[in-house]
Image (cartoon, rainbow, N blue to C red; front, side, top):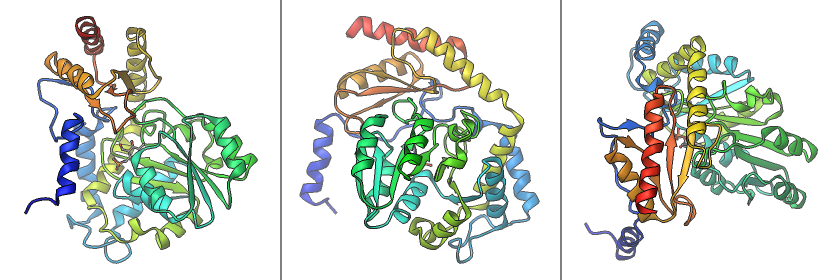
Length: 372
Ligand SMILES: Cc1ncc(COP(=O)(O)O)c(C=O)c1O
């Protein structure tokens, strides 16, 4: 059956604007500079073996959860994993969601109430913005990492104020100043929520905990599909918060639990990383090497780097040139990012060789010399 005419038009517009999205996969001959597998854990055979062992030891023989967690899906691996995570993250409570997208939806749709205010960084991830859209609270963005703008908006806000940010921003790789945000939130009795998707496993167990601010933050969201190389996410916070989510968070309540193997993999990734802190040091070395070599570009201190190449056509051409040179990077197009800031997003991994990193940067220079 054909799509309704106006829907079809939207699709055609995407094609005209050169922003049409298509599925693909990383060609085996290319070096992966696009995935969030910063520590290589998604392909680590020891993690895989450990996960199998955890599954066997748990004596859970089902391969599906069989129901939502409040009905039949709450197998022992959930309880083990949540308690391991609460312990490692030094949180009172932990609640696992099937993905980071659902954790943000689940937290932000449930906690801020009608009459409250949510203030979120303008560059927050789509899952945060979608969670906020489901809330009945007043919502406003504040300028990216702009503390003055945030403070001005807090002063004008009504009800309980919630401030939402990311410790490492997913498309830019820059960081929020968590200490300053904690100070502002404490001054105005606002509650701070930090999405640690790209910081978990890269900066210890997340930047909030690494900077010893975890007791002063209302909630943290950690996701396992990035540096942990697994799948799923968790909200970390007080017992009261976790009890509330179990009772009122619809994306938690009305969905089938995660399969036992997925929980075993999360546990395995955490245990493995606990025993291999050198992986984080190796990644830090690769980030400094990149920063040295890419001094002609703007760089960050995280594994996420960006090279701005304005225009969807130009940024696609740069990405495809780099693929031909053997480096797989993703062009990030508008409207995902504002027009004029289209970019290639480079994800550095602990396993990259210095030769691969230097080669990628050299190829970007070559392209610029030829076409810019
Ligand atoms: C900052 C941030 N939060 C949440 C998510 C969603 O996590 P997940 O992929 O587990 O749904 C992402 C994914 O890209 C992200 O970058």
